[in-house]
Length: 126
Figure 1 (tube, rainbow, N blue to C red):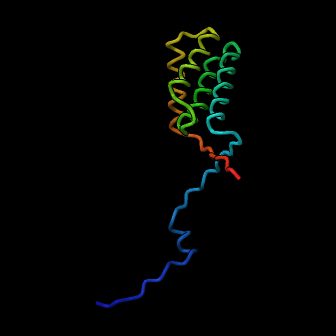
Figure 2: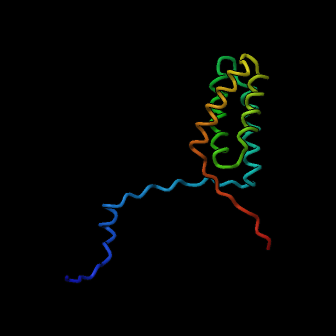
């Protein structure tokens, strides 16, 4: 058996054969993650309540998806989010609770499948 020396592959060759996934840029959050999530949920609830006639389902679904991404990132509790959005939709009117719940569960589930990347910072004592 003949022994031979193994040498590292040149970078140009590695770039041709190794697929490198682009890195997602994190979203920088100035406040704490919990405060960020709470603020986003409050905004979503207000938007659902103020949705114009004929756009209620689209606004509800879009906001459910957005905050669902934060649920997927661990910043919000799923049951809290779903209850708040369903309540907002029912208060707005024009939607049954069952239909609002179906829209919210679908939107939150889709958002959780694509969690938002959020940079987390902790205060450092000097």
